Amino acid sequence: MPTPARTSREAIVAAGRTILDSDSLDGLTMSRVASAVGVRSPSLYKRVRDRGELVHLIANAVAEDLGDRVRAAATTGDPRRDLRAMVDALRAFAHERPESYRLLFSRLPDAWRADPDLAARAVEPLFRAVGELAGPDHELEGARTVVAWARGFIDMELSGSFKLGGDVERAYAFGADHLIAAIGAARRPAPPMTGDRPATPRKVRPDARRDR
Amino acid sequence: MPTPARTSREAIVAAGRTILDSDSLDGLTMSRVASAVGVRSPSLYKRVRDRGELVHLIANAVAEDLGDRVRAAATTGDPRRDLRAMVDALRAFAHERPESYRLLFSRLPDAWRADPDLAARAVEPLFRAVGELAGPDHELEGARTVVAWARGFIDMELSGSFKLGGDVERAYAFGADHLIAAIGAARRPAPPMTGDRPATPRKVRPDARRDR
DNA sequence: ACCTGAACACCGTTCAAGT
DNA sequence: ACCTGAACACCGTTCAAGT
Image (cartoon, rainbow over all chains, first blue to last red; front, side, top):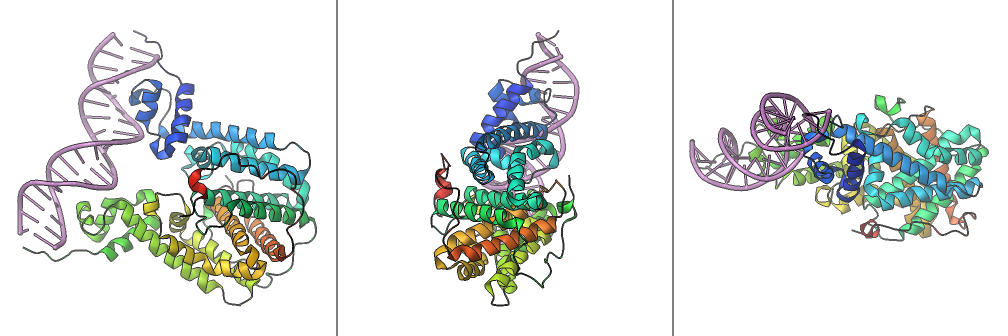
């Protein structure tokens, strides 16, 4: 005899997001999610293939949120100001919901991660601003440089790496100002120096280069 | 009746390092380590408090290795060249042993991480080079900017974030050249721009700022 | 149809019993 | 002293049985 559904995919994802933010990814257990939506853990498998798919759905939702935030931050039309505002927005998001942020950017099985196009769309306006600043020839490298710095800086903040004291806000402003200035100067030929020696890496993991 | 020891703390840590590099941190299970050293998992608890302590000991060993590599990379005495070589060495290490690298820099329970002073010692020569380049007033911010960029770039490589194609080596060289140039220019007053608006973050997690 | 208890495989960890 | 099997608590996941 048919039974009315007692929960839904949306409710499960929503509960998962809440648990993720409060209890971290490790705390996101199937039985915790189940009890949050009022069923037992085996019932979740009617709505979701496995825990990996649940994480994936949560990651997609987070990617959309972050994209909205970044997009909303670019308001002036001036690429320098907009770029700074977008990086600030990325950082603010990471501070507010570190577990969600980490879900987007840390190494996880591919099947767990957000859809690549969703993730790409989240940072697309950032790429555009860098393109305007650095010129189309350097858009990709420039954006990668800014994004890499922002990711690394935020990562260090979130993982408590700033243990030498000093003013973290000052270090952030220093990095942002100098990077944006350097990107803006990239229209002219790259600075000299660092010549004669090859760019090192003897061994690069195959899949670290491949596009996927 | 006393029984001769069938293994040792050192053998356990060594086996753990091998398993970490080949099977990732998740694959580093107590029973896998135990069978690698020829005992059953309960016996490991005679040498090691728990899995967390084992991870901590491995992290310490990795930190020392990385410190050696970074230190050995600075050979010329010229801060620009040495800084570039040290960042290259950091990247090469990450490519060769990504799981070890990640153990050092990803978020883990404090008790699992390398001793802070060991980690600090590993990047200390890098700080010195930045100090020479940027002047003592900007050593800390400068080093944090370079380290943040390097961490972020390597993280993106290792997590497969470079999915837009393009030449990753070129992006690396672009970032390294521009950053080092920007740091070198920091002796003069910081670039203008980005004025009038506050540096954003509305909410900062308490422990993200604290030094520990 | 949907839900559940019971069961399974797999962790880390403890402990009484063996040598 | 050191080692081990058995046991426990905790995962994710499957499935037969219930409604």
